[in-house]
Image (cartoon, rainbow, N blue to C red; front, top):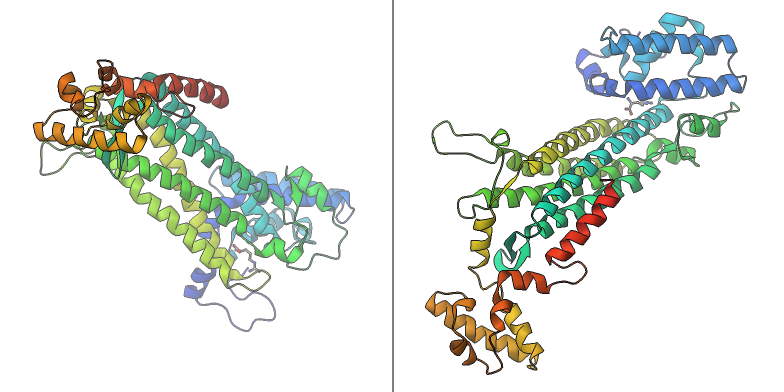
Length: 459
Ligand code: ARG
């Protein structure tokens, strides 16, 4: 018990303030399940290597089963005096099973223990997050399928550029979230390696079978250098970078939802359950959820910066600085978890206002490129066609009409090659259908992509 001092070496106890400052149990108790699984794998190996007896091994198993039960039922008493999750569980084990509990820590340090716990925990969270990304992608693919033929203005510089399919637009986000899932799974390979056996920093003099522990824990490999194993948190930083990109993608989508829901666009409606009203303005319905998600992306990116900065000045090997890895990591996982769940539900309930999108697409000469391409196909060099169409747009603008509203005679003033078939080219639908190239916005391409994604995502 640390209410007095750490060991015989210490001549005075910590003040309450310093105790609170150095303790991590309030947040790292969340690692309890990983801590118990890691300890059981370690004990199993110690017994197999005859470092502890079969009886001690059995006592440790029995004690841990009871501790698990106590924690799950909320009866476990977490003590600040015992600093962290590791010492809390070990102390309780010793209370329950005596000397066997004191033998568990043979050939182990909290330094390799905590690195193992965080990795085990994060591996499980990555699997959950990849599942949530899959769900969100499925929702977006279904929206794309439903709205492959809905046309909205595509923007560059937020100025009307060319018409695109709303389905195509949704599938752009599917690509982003697919890469995000890939990134998480790639980081997982490096998360899923075993530090145990590195002990405090130099390895241990006991004949540990580290490969056996790795197998028991389902880890893909054993950390090959003890100093590196206990000290680097690059795996957490990598995860955090992947998490930041997910939130950046969520934030871009949020920004679009917010714009699209504004009166100036009027492209979509979000289900009421994702909006809030105003306490003063009776007419208001605000897109709070996407706004918050856009805000929370800042917090996750902030955690990445926190973690990477935490690492940069640390000499080898373990330093207490690393205790600061947990809160940002936990908060990143929690934020992602909530956000992805909410977005899958919200995007599923999205109302698409096809008429408003189409009206907007008719406003900014979105098919001007199509007219230029038309002239190129009739033999004009593209640069000349570009100039001819600029004149046509200028004229149409002066009259306040779309290119397709100009008469054939008027259009032929700009170039004699223009014929009656130009009107198909100038239509939004014609423009979309023309972009029937792999990765293009033609509804036929969108439907092909939808098929591919459904196979990839398993329905
Ligand atoms: N609570 C510590 C952490 O989170 C565990 C390792 C502490 N090791 C030590 N020698 N102080 O990093």
